Image 1 (cartoon, rainbow, N blue to C red):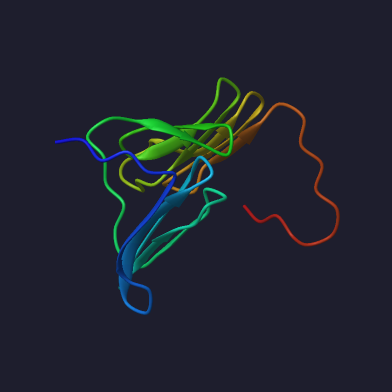
Image 2 (tube, rainbow, N blue to C red):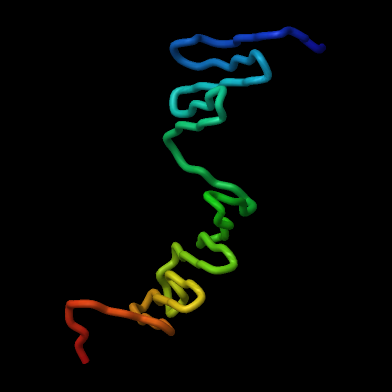
Length: 109
């Protein structure tokens, strides 16, 4: 069965619904809302079985990264926690950089 209409609304506008008109769709439920502009407001967990992109970063299993920057969500071992081409911070606290300038403060040991 196929239903063809210019606009539709299914549900209860005050609780949950799916609506569409003018090449837009809107979906709303108790903890999820997709508006006609593509904005999503939600409460809960986002999970996916494959990576993706957010704000120009690749989404890895435990990191956000580009060709020039790496931000890990894992703080185990000596893996890089924050890494860019000439600057690295390991989860262990080790910091390396090829051009570093510290102003003020103290560096001990």
